[in-house]
Length: 188
Image 1 (cartoon, rainbow, N blue to C red):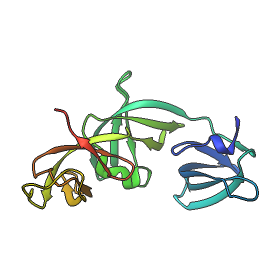
Image 2 (cartoon, rainbow, N blue to C red):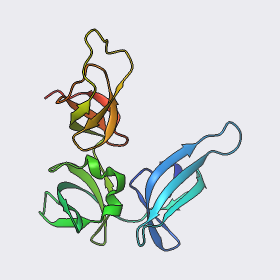
Image 3 (cartoon, rainbow, N blue to C red):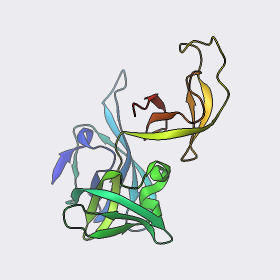
């Protein structure tokens, strides 16, 4: 199915020269002068080679037919990351290079959108936000306001981020799965 380049998003799968590519980053660039373009950073599914392409935003691109369905993350081992379809209870193993830098944000029982092509997991989209516990940060200083600068912290998944000064060790916080940025204190 042909779609315009500007409609493509991270996790979509496109077909180019008979090969399938999963989009890692899709960025629409509107220069002050000239034609707007869509910059796509993609990974070839067959061998994992990363490619960067530019298209005019109105150019047609062939989007591959893949099955996007919600799956539940079970566990990871030497074979990769294991997911289960909650409707059929079928399990699928996804290789480490498909999960990539999203791996630290996967939590047991987390619902993710998994793209499957001919029985092989090829792309993964995590929920936008996830809750983690702060395991290491500077102590809270009395009298510091929440509007001052942020301080470094390490989350329970090992990711380094910055948090407001009033957040202490043991506090559960909500972070963005795209970059690990602090959103808010968890409400549980």
